[in-house]
Structures are given as C-alpha cells and as structure tokens.
Amino acid sequence: SFLRWCTAFLVFLPFAWPKLHKEWPLLRARMPVVILMALTGVVGFNTFLYIALHYTTSINASLVNSSTPIVICI
Image (cartoon, helix red, strand yellow):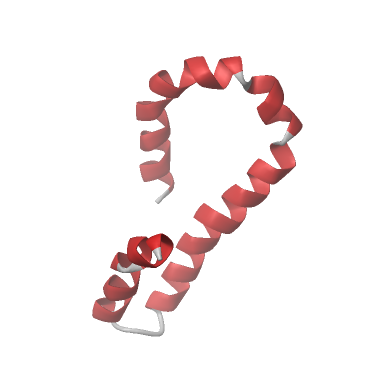
C-alpha cells in the first residue's frame, strides 16, 4: 500500500506542482486540518479495511469496498 501511494504521488506531482506551489501559504496555514483529513480518510480507511479482512471473507470485503463510491454519492 505504501509503494502504491508513493507511485501515485510521483505520477501526479508534476501535474499538481504549479497549483501546489502557488497556494502553498494557504495550505501551510491549514496544515493541521490537512493532516487530520489524511489520517482519518486515507490511513483510517485502509487500516480498518485490512483489519476487517481478518474477520470476514474476501467477497464481503470486496462488496463493501466496491460500494464505497455509491455510498459517498448518496
């Protein structure tokens, strides 16, 4: 998972760099909120998903994981 996120970071960085560089003062001012969102969103979701895989079948986990975009839209 770590290598997947690092690869995605390196792929998208050239596209995001101009805007990131331009808006860095605003981002730096809101850094605690950004870190909180990263921990609860990305890290929390993946951690709970991997923990849940120990207690359920892979079919159930894939159904829950694939229904996430639908739940977000609702």
